[in-house]
Image (cartoon, rainbow, N blue to C red; front, side, top):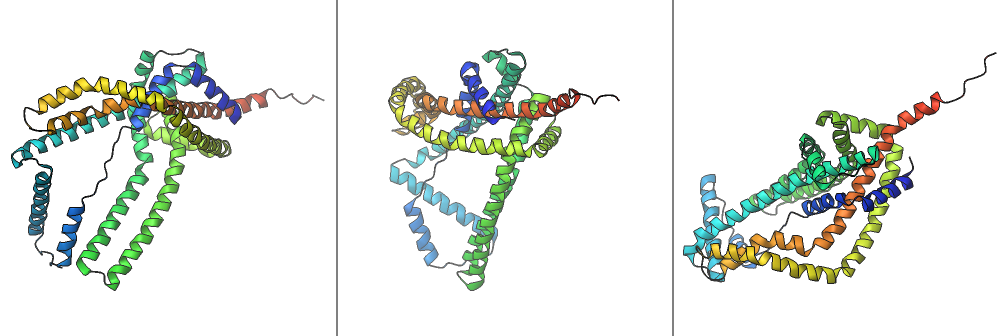
Length: 375
């Protein structure tokens, strides 16, 4: 297998097959579709510290402890409402809007997840069809071959690949919870400190093992997915077929993996430069995103103003249109990420095809070898 030949062919497919760009943009949006907010409340921390300094004994009844925790959370919630100037009468409505926003985010996440695996299937099959027949599918045809049972199987394969990471994070959370519980119940005594140190060492070991397994399975996932998408196999058959191909061709795969790591480093440097150079373009698309999102924001804010007063309705309207604004505003950067995603997927599809053809090529070489002369 010639890695340089595969990279050149993938580059040619990327720039000549424009329909793949749409699915790359979908993959980039799906990869950037989760938002996380990390905040801290200093007043809550100070109040918690003052309560812990009093060394109040923990209640023996778990029901009473739950009531106390609920009461403290409710007290902190209403105190926060008073600080920002929100009447207590609007608390129920605000909670309902927060729940609606969470449901909206969950639905949006599900849409992104479905779109991701449909796009993954479409890109793999479109590249394979182009290599087989030289035919370039349209965007509509790509969605048609992507919307299939295979996309669901790709999701299940990805879930199995990420299972060690999920279990590792679960062990870490359990370990942290045990350390916190021991420190709260026993104080900073010698047994508790020894348990905390042991749990910290165990967590570092879990992180190391899970990282190695995740990297290994992440590499195999390329072959699991392509066995499923190109050979129409079940999840179990795809895992067996992908692992068998990787085991038989581990040298070629290892070389290609190292090449892709090097390209990833180069891409990181190039993308950082491209992000800086495209800032004027992003400024223009940000204005376009604001113009596109202003009408939905006004509609959402006006509807919310029927239930809330003051400035809260307009904040709610802005929150609901943020995904639309970010998509339009950062579309140049999403397009760059989409190109990188399509290129990577194309490379591994070509690798899979090359490795699948290697036994056939070997048999042809053997069959075409000259026969020894007959005496």
